[in-house]
Image (cartoon, rainbow, N blue to C red):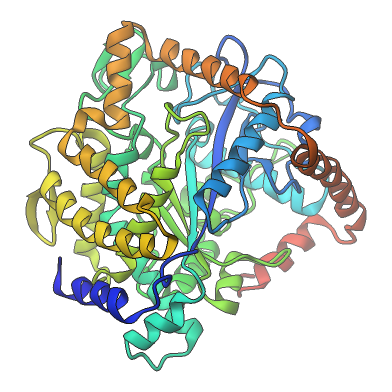
Length: 526
């Protein structure tokens, strides 16, 4: 262990109450494409039986009408989070007819951008803003990239942790300022060390050629229908996937909450030459919300975001300015094709311990050199992370991924022991140990298992993904049906969400342009 984190872990283990790290809140947002029986992207509207995509708190849509997003509340227990995610899947499968949920992050059978329908949220100002924003993403970056799916892991440390940690750190800061500063330490370290999550949880080493066309110069061909990277972990998170090279010139500081807010607000106010050429209104279509570097805060791509729950209509930067960081959202996890809901408890438990590690570890402020190192490590792990010869850069020095990962794992395991002490049992240590085995045995990683499935079946990625999609649907129809009070929770939410959307639409009293002006004026943008 480094001296700083060793001391912090030792103080938490000896001087803090046993449950100091227990009870942190875990939530999941899981995206899945709806596809037809043949694997083609669904052209059907969001099913009315699932409620309103604008207001249903469990089931919404992301970029496309066909890209479902399942949202769990945040629970202290990973089993509760997983249980609700499972129930949402059951409820959905029973209401999408013969359609399937695509179980891999990378899409397959897709036409051009015009065949990817934008998500629709009704006629209200807020609903229209969400759709126009997505239209802008399509014009700016292409719709195919926006159809890539993933898992987002939301996490906040237990409330009881903060006064204990602040006391151990002998900090006299305001409580909110100390919490935000600590979360930003976590965010910086996750940006620096997030390659580990790509290695452990990446599950997209291959994809259908239809995603790019058939230009074989893009990457190696597994067969006539499949591109792949032999040592790849997450093509979703590579430069070919959801890593946005178009935003490389946007510098958003992670050194403090104030700098972060200032830089995001500046990007939302600063015109972009290429986006100006797209225009705002053309041919009777609202193409984008504005011509600036970012339309809104959420357009800024990042594998982790510091967040606070916003009030109705409140901009994310305003929410952060109001109360500081409340939780983080990790966005770099692929759908695990081997898990029916795309993630499991071991993954959540490891991510919790790893995020605490990122908070406790020494967290230097970022300069240009560190940003560049991060980019190289991230993209390299995504495309060749399982290569035994692959090396990362650690503050100017090359080192093997396996050696650095093993060092991190020792610290994360010590944190898992503290969590288990408060929770009872050894679930967290077992979760860390399971991931540690993947460092020793790269062939057991999800990405390697996907490639092995292709080799064993001697079929294209499409056929493996289709078999998985059919198998997962069968799984949810074979387990105990959702019923009683649990079923009514989702039925009531679907029904009430439609009513809430209608009420929002009836309550609008200003024009769309006035609504946008009011929204942007919250944080200084004209």
